[in-house]
Image (cartoon, rainbow, N blue to C red; front, top):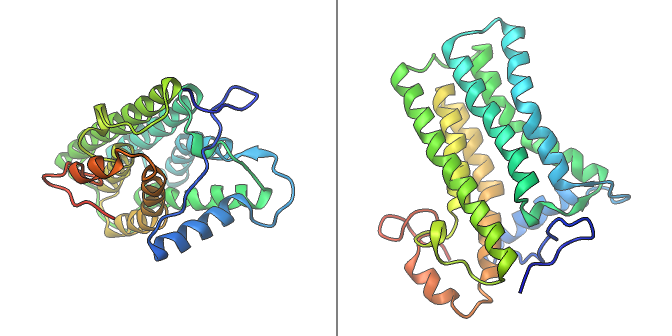
Length: 255
C-alpha cells in the first residue's frame, strides 16, 4: 500500500488532525489558517515552494548583511556556512523526498504570512552580523555549534528520508530506525540545527526567538502528528515505550 500522490508525482498532503490539547489546537488552527487560507482567493503556489524560496535565500541574505555591515569576522563566516548550507540542504531535500504536509496550495495572503513568519529566523544573522547585541562567541562555542549542527542535520534529513521512503512502500506507523526510541527525531534535528545558529549569535534574544517559534509552530505540529498517528492499533504501545523528543529513559512523553 503506497501513499497518495498528485498528478505531478509529488506526495499529496495527508489529511490533518488537530492536536487534542485545546490550547495547542487553537494555535494550530490559527497558524494553519493564516499561513494557508488568509484572505481567500486563488491558490497559485504550493506552500513548499514558498518555504524553498525563503530557505534558499538565506545564504545570499547573510552575504548581503556581511557586505552591508562590513563584517567578515570568523563568527560571521561560520554562521554563513551553517545557515546557508542548511537552506541549500532543505531545498535539495524537498526535491528528493518532499514532506507531504507542505504540498498544499496556499492563497497569496497565506504565502505572504508563511514567508514573513519564517523571516523571524533572519533576525538571528542580523543580530550577529550587525553587532547590535551580544559579544562574539569563543572558538569553543563555535566548535560546539558546528558539532550540534552536524548532529541536528543528520537527524532531520535521516528521519525525513526514512519517513518518505518507508511510506512509498507501505502506510502505517514507523517504529524503527530514527523513530525507534523517539517519536519526532526530525523535529529534534531541526531544533538542534537552529540551536547551533543561536550558539553562534551568542545572545539570549536569539534563544527567545527560537523558543517562541518552537512553541507556536513546532509543538502544535508535533501534537497534531500524534493525534493523527493515534488511529493506528500499535500506537499505545509505541507511545508508551518512546520519548517525545528524546529517548524515553531521558525524555518526557507528552500527551
